[in-house]
Length: 123
Image 1: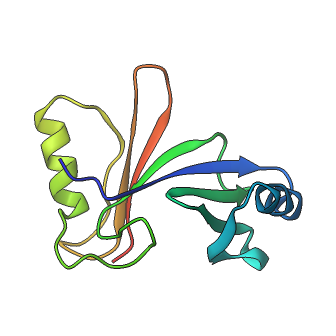
Image 2: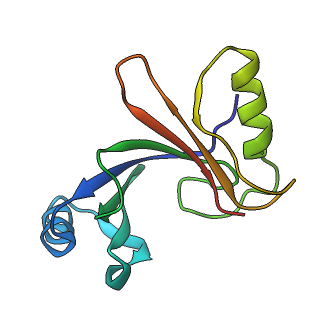
Image 3: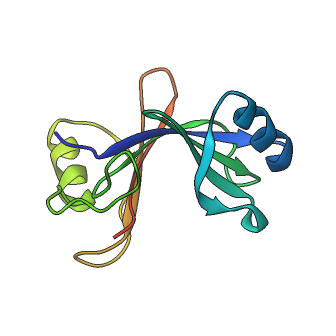
C-alpha cells in the first residue's frame, strides 16, 4: 500500500515560537501560510507541519500524490481506493472521504493506541 509522503502534524500553541524553535533545529519553511496559522517545514527527509488552533492533538499524516518535497507524483493511489483497501482489511475509518469520484479528499483512522492518522490528498 502506497500512502504517499509522510509528515507529522503538530498542534502548537504559538506558531511564531514553534517556527523559530524548529528553525534552530535546521528546519526551513517549504509551505503553508503563517497568517493562516500553519506551516510545513523540512530538514533533510524529515517533514513536519505546524498547526495552531486546527487540531486537538498531533497527527501522523500521509499525502497520496506527493513526494517528500510536496511535489506532484505522476502515478499514485487515490485516497478513495486507499480507504476501500483499508475497509477490506477491517480498519475502522473515523472520518470517511466526503464528495466526488476524484480530486482532493481525506479520511482519518486511529491506531490501537489512539494516535490519529490522516490520509490527505491535495489533488
